[in-house]
Each structure stands twice: as structure tokens, then as C-alpha cells.
View 1 (cartoon, helix red, strand yellow):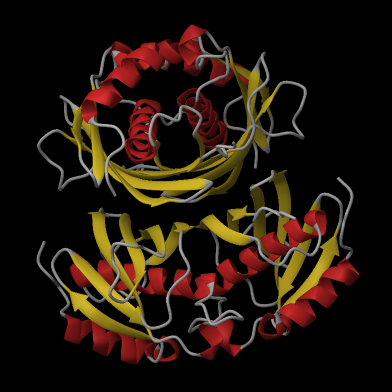
View 2 (view 1 turned 180 degrees about the vertical axis):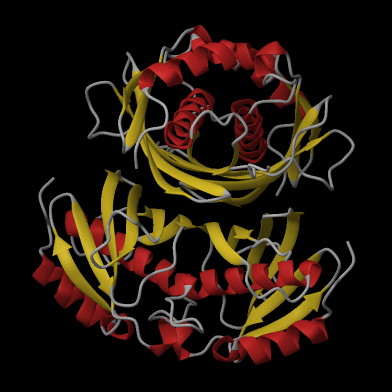
Length: 141
Length: 141
Length: 141
Length: 141
């Protein structure tokens, strides 16, 4: 598949349409096979003890899956998450949390993504894995 | 099963140990079969358009499952989420979002919960469903 | 919702279109809110020791979800499973295994079901829980 | 991680302890990072039309995850599936169906695996993806 949106396009889209999230998430890599994003964890993302909370990891996986789909589909703002399965496996280390998502299927009405979350520098010890399905609205006339 | 923590106990525990979350979540009902909690949605929980975001729904399901386990297990702060499967089915209506979680299994090392999220007043039109597994650390000496 | 197919209709459909499965599964109850089916476990469904195998439980959940959707949608043979999340919680007892599925959403392109599996007579001690999503093909002109 | 069981060991274990399944499944590859198995589909695995059924895909993912764990853990026959999330994405082509499973976490009480199913020769067009959690019993004295 070829990219319909580059890292630059996605960054602009995030800054314009997701103003709330734009401060929290950053693009790390955008290729024809996957999109990687980082969570810039601030106070609100942390549990007592300083680890990133489950909902913040879910948020990172969700936004990364969304932009992974958009990179192949183009700037269609209306895709919505219909399902997520997430396994939490290890405590994140202090520092940046990365999510790397791959698009496994881009159908007419459904897109399926899968990826892993890991602390920067240790992709072989994933903190979590997640698979997400998005519903893509019909494009119509 | 009999309750090891009442609604009052859970409220105290939430206020003391989850200071960040205590403003966002409220107990609606605590019985021997289920725990219901409400999300007091503020700006940070909303998507453009005013609907509650996916991560906020995940957070509500996660906290409600946690307290559902604690109500049967007692104040063991160390249970951690290991898996969540969540389906988003409808847009929430404006107003309070409720989650009602049931404890399906309380084993020695795993607890399994299942429940639904719905806009207050319409439990028959669930906004989302979720099942969560928690790992319970061994107690003992 | 009103039923588009009764228990009798579903039984005929199963016998005619699922000849392989018709010997294994039986309808227990078909109502406006749920469909219950039983697995008539034979040698091929059992693990060493005599418990019903995971794949046989998956098969029961899958077929029950399918007929739960058909009971509301009518005899549209083309709905296909797109996602299943299943938790195995207890060993089944000897005897009939029942699955009770509920239709949570019947959208234009997706249907979501949720239910539990239990040994006959002990619905309060579920053996497994499962949620399944089906894709419904467009009906066209 | 180093292998505690080679392909040869796993084959022997399958033939001895899973006599029912031994005819259906075959090892394709066993490495330090993953285990691949194939389903030798026969009549009982097929839907009308000749495609492999959902339950047969589930069975392949389940057995492959199990042996993936055993390859790292050693011949501990008592690990049991506690959760599976599976997405069905494409119709399998005629011919052999392969599952490739990776062990993401091997903890004291839980093991998490993730993998994909694909028709032989087209790993880039996965038929399904699956993640499975196994509970590992305590090893005792």
C-alpha cells in the first residue's frame, strides 16, 4: 500500500482536529507498513508511583491505530473505534511510551489494526499489546 | 458472595487512594452481584461534539471493574488489569454515563468481570460493553 | 424487537443449511431478547479427561450468536464473524453445555452479541463468557 | 530465551498427549521467538463452500499458542487457556492454513501469546489475528 498521508500531513491533521490530544501525542515514524507514536506523559497520565495509567495506554493505542488507518485511507475524520482488545503485560519504565501500530486489513467498512506498546528503547519487552477495529463510514456521493 | 466492602467503604477507599480519579467517578449502586459507577464527564473526557471519548469510557469500565472486585475481595490495592475487551456500540447521549459491572469469577490469581456502559436512563441501549481480567497478587506471608 | 424467526424457523434453517452442525447443536430457548443453544457433546468435542474442549465452546458461542442475530434479522445466511473475545473461567461439569446469547446491537453493517456458557443447571457459575461481532453484508436492491 | 523443547520434542508430545489433534496439526517451524503450525484441513474443518471454519481457526491458534508456550516453558501439560481475542479478516484460500505465534510474556502465572493465521505463501494477507492468554499452574514442591 502507498501512503495517502505523510508524517507531516498527519501532524497537521492532529494539530488542527485534535487540539486536546495534540500536546499529548507525537509521531515517531510513519511508513507504508506502520505508524509509531509516543505519549508525552504528564501528571494526568500517571498512576500513583509514576507509571502510565491503563486508560492513557488505551488512549495511545487508539490514537495510533486511528492515524495508522488515516495514513492509508486519507483524511477521513469519521472512522470510529468499534472494538479494542488490550493486554497489559509489564509496568512501563519511566520515560517515553511508544506505540507501533500496523494495518492488517483495510476493507470497505472495517479496518483492523494491531500493535504493541513499549518503553522507548525496549521494543522486545512490550508493556502492552492491542488490536483495534474501526468502522469506516460509506463514502457516498 | 457477601460484600467485604460496602458502598461507603469503597467511597472512602476511592477518595483516599485515587485522589486524581475521585472527582471523576461516583458510586451509583453496590450490591452482592454488581457495582455501578457514574462518570461525571468534564471537558477533558469529551471529544469535539461533546460525546464522551473512548479512553474515558475505558477508564470508567476499568475503575468500575476494579471496585467490583474489591467489594468482594476486600481492600487489596494491588490487583492489576491484565486484559480488556471493549466494544463501542452507540454514541452516548449528553448527561451521565453509567457502568454496571458484574464479577463472573474470583479465583486465587485471576478475577473476571463483565459489564455494560449506558447513558443514564437507557440501560437497554448500551453505549459499550466490556470484559476485564485482573491479576490478583498472592497474599500469604 | 420482534422475532423474525421463531425457534421452529431456526431449527429448520440449521437442519437445512448446516447439516454438519445440526447433530451437535440444539435450540433451548428463543425469545425476543436472547437465544439459548445446547451442545450435545460427543467424543470429538472432548479433551482427555472428558471436559468439553475450548474450540467446541467457541463453536457453540459462535453458532448461538449467529442464530441470535438471525432471529432478529431474518434468514440472511451471509453474516460472518469478524471478532470474538472469549474468557474461559471454569471447567464444565459432565452433561449438557448451554450458551445463552443476547443481541446488544443490530446496526446496518455490524451486529454485536454477548453471552455466557454454563453447564446445564448452574447458570450462576459460568464456564465461559464471550462477545462476538458479525459483519452484515449490504442487502442491495 | 532459549528453547526448552525442540520441534522434535513438541512433535513427540503432540503425538503422545494429543492423539485426537495429532492428525490435524503439524509443526512448520520452531524458533526461539515463535512457533508455526499448519492445519491439515479435512472435511470436518470446512464450511459449505470449502473454507476453513471459524472454530477450526480458533483450534489452530489455540494449539499453536499452547506449544509456543511449551517450547519455552518445558513439557508442563497443565497450562490452560483463559482468554482469546480473535479477528477474522479474510477468507482462507484453498490449501494449508498456517498459524505463527509469538510468546510476548512468560510470567509466573500468566503467559501471553499473539499471532496470525494465513494461507500458505501469503503471510502478508492474514486471514485472522489472535491473542491468547494462558494460566500457568504453580509448580509446587
